Structure formats: structure tokens, C-alpha cells
Image (cartoon, rainbow, N blue to C red; front, top):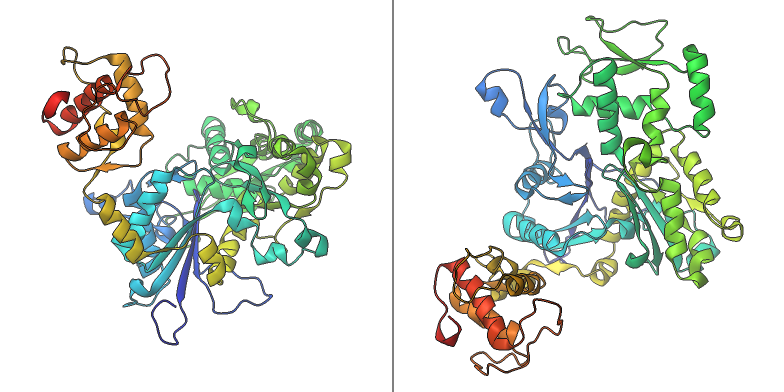
Length: 529
């Protein structure tokens, strides 16, 4: 038990989504009631475009963003994968320790060396991204234990979903996880809760793409809201819906617009009213004190149609229903029926009116009749489909056994391994030969150099100096990992004999150590320079 004594361990759970971040603390016991995160904020930071230099340099997080009429927003992730760890650290720090308008999860003075943290990550997240995340959690924050868990694993453990399972579902080891969120949509079959990654499918249309689509439509027809992306997102969430029969409903909207048109009154930042707008009846209310509003008619359903026809916005991919059905059909033939009997849906896009119903229709229509007849869907009972991943994290965090089975890392063990590999001060092997030497370098051969680049990129080794680099080259180029072996005719360790591969270990060493010298600014020693 973290912290020792009789004190219950503190477990922080963070659903680190591309659009929003949800965080909370795991209670010591779980009951049947629905649970909600203590913190829900945009996973972004912003800076104002108005005011003096001090105002423009001030960093805005969470509720501090929307009162700002014009701002530049930065999201630390792209397609769900964190690419800006410095920004992500700022957001996590605000969530954990608190900020002006954001209460922290933990009381002031809490020793993080007694706290466990679980963080969600997208399926197929690059290993190096996860490693950097672990380094941030252990070295920058100082958590006692930490674990990154793939979203599909989390989603299927949500208590709001598992509470609906009967005996058949508990006995069925198969299932399909569909996660439709801000960064895109993914569908992956699972067996005994583990994703069958070779069967996974992805679609790039998500909340971000649809929000940008709406922003462009508004800028072309009515008002430019490029400086207020969260406001555009709020308009999409409150105005748009998915049509069950798109062609018929668009035709009806154009023929009788008074039935489908909706007005969104833009916020008046000069007053103390809400900093987000509201939907009104256009025949009753015209706008705010400045008369500013946007009207949407058939655009309300056109925006969401990109989920089912990505080609309509230039993305050559299958629609959401077809993509999910494709994941079922990629599963082993003997398991497809079992996979379809337990389809678990989660993600914020299912909150859009009509999306859930349209998905069920599209999904079944793309499956063979014998499989479609057995499909069963499971979603959150309270309708908060966007909380499925976080609730699954909450459930996993309440069980020491589950966390151990998923590979919970302890800080001391991780730091010991990191020191052994010289991670803090090291250079990745792939960086050793990442720069192409200038033409004319002695012993340089471009084709062989590119081949060696691929071999280095596949290595997990960390290199600190020229000596480490030469030893790495020896292990790379010789069959037996004997440092100092100078047998030039030894078998080359990389068995791939594609064009450009060095024909023997001596030539491999010549190419590899050329990269070492270029990286560290030194000449190779011995016979390999």
C-alpha cells in the first residue's frame, strides 16, 4: 500500500483526451451510483489576443479561456497523441495542484510520492511517447506509481456499461469497442478484454474535424469565429445533429426552413452574462445587445454527415458504421458472431443527437444478416457517453489486482532502469545516424547509410558518448555481441539482405561509426575510422 500504515492509497485518474481532460480521485469503495469526474476542462491552453503585453502573455487554462473574446489556443496533442509535453505538464499541474479558477484534485501539501496515477492513451500510441509520459510523471511530478492504459481497455470496464451485462455477456470473452471522440473514431475487437490490434480500424473524422468544418462554413456565410474555437465547438454541440435519412431531411429543411432553422445567440463579452452563447427560437429573440447571432438550417445535419460520408469533406475513408463493421469482419471468422453480440460504444460524438441511432442503422446494414441479427449494443445508462473511458479508469484504479495485471510501474524501479539505460542524459540510437554526412566523407555510401538508419531506428538503446556509440555499432554489426571483436568477416547481425545492406560486418561498422562521428564530432577509434 502506497504511503504505508492504514492510510488508503490515493489514486488519481486522468482521461487525457485530445479535446477535453477529465480527472478525479478513486474512492475507496464503489457503489452502484454513477460517478463523475471532479474536473472537466479543455485539454488546451490559450493566450488572449487583446489587451497589453502582460494580458497577451498570460496563460489561460480551463474556465479562464471562455471569458476571453479573442484568443490563440494550443492543444498539446495531435490525433490523440501528446506531441507537446511542456504544455501538457502545465495543464496536468493545474488539474492536480489547482489554479485561479480551477480547484486542484489534491489538497495543498500532498506528497505525490504517496500517490498513484492512471492516464488513458490512444490505441497504438508510440512507445517513445509513453516513455516520455512516464518520465514526466515520475521525474517532474514525483508520483509513486504510474500507468498508461489504452482507451479501449478502459472503456469496457466502465461500471455504467458492465452493470448491464447478463450471464451471456460475462461468459462471452469477445466484444467490439467503438470509441468516437474528438481526435477521431476507432473500432477494435477485444478478446478477454485485450484489443486484437491487427483487427483495429480508424477513421480520422472526429469532433475536431467537424468543428473546423463548421468554423469554415460560418466564416464563409455569416461570421468569422477563428479566434474563438471553443465557442464554435459549443455551437456544434448544441446545434448540430445527425439525420437518419440525410437526403430526405435536407430536402425538407430547404423546402420548409422555419421547421429546422435554429438561432445561436453569441455571447456579449461586455456584460457579466454567460461567456458561451445559447440556442433560441429565431422568431422570438433576435440576438444579444449587439445583435450578433448565427442561424443554421440544413448545415446542422450537413456537418455531422461527415461521420458517415468522410468523402464529402475530402477524407477518403469509410464512414463510422462501415468502419466499425469492417473491424468485426477482420476478426477471426469463428469469433465474429461473438464479437457482434457485445458492441460497447463510448466517446463524446455519441452525445450528438441522432448519432447513436444512425450508427446502429449503418453498423447493422454493413454486416451479413446472420451476424447483424445477433448484434447487441451497450452504452452508459445515464447518457454520458463521453465519460466511459474515465469511468473505466476509475474502476481499474480501485483494484490493486487489475493495476498489477496491467503492468503498474513503481517510481523507484522505473528510475533504476532509467539510470541503467542513461535515459536522462542519453541519446537515442536512432539519433546517432539521423543526420546524413556531407558528400565526400571517407567511407560513406548513401545506400548503406540509409540501411543502417533503419537498423538504428529499430533500436531501443540509449547512447551517451562516442565510446557507447562504437559499442552499439559492434552489437549491431556482429552476430555475437562481443565488444572488441574485430573479425571483419563475422556474420552481419541484421539478416535483411535488401539492396543497400552492407555485405559484411566491416562495412557495417564503417557506415555506423561514420554516423557516430558525425553525431559526437569525434573520429572513430581503431580500425573502424
